[in-house]
Image 1 (cartoon, rainbow, N blue to C red):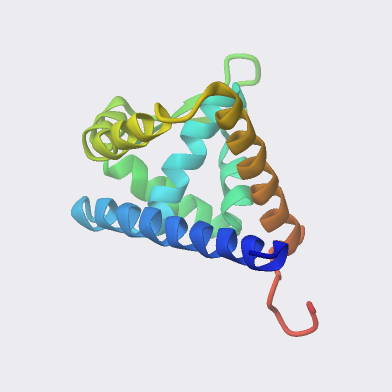
Image 2: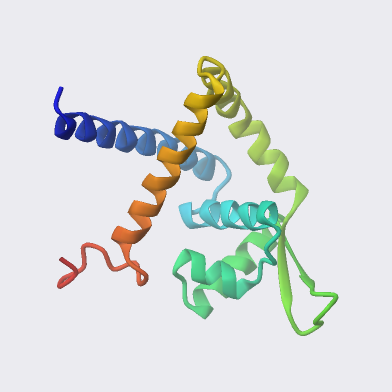
Length: 161
């Protein structure tokens, strides 16, 4: 198999994995009466927490590509559903911080736990060097997609080619 076919084979595998994970997330969203953007928002907030980043409505809106009104509606909806909490930053009382509520964490854990378990089990078949290579590969693929989207997320828009 030449390098072009090998690369395209990996692209197709990545696409297939993305579709499966998207279906999985869609099932979770539908089961809990959420919009796909609601799920993306919860993931962004969990990722920010893991990274030690203060999650503000502005940060969330930026990461999701929403304007201020859309972000406010999203935050209001998730708060009303009991999935996130708003609080004041203790260092700057004017700043609002967002946090995922334990209820949302438990819902996610109960739904996504089995697939995470399957992924971890599948990873056990790889040695540490292979997992390091996979981590490097997936990181590079994520960066490539982000570059292709462009800073304004306008990939595929007229004039973007």
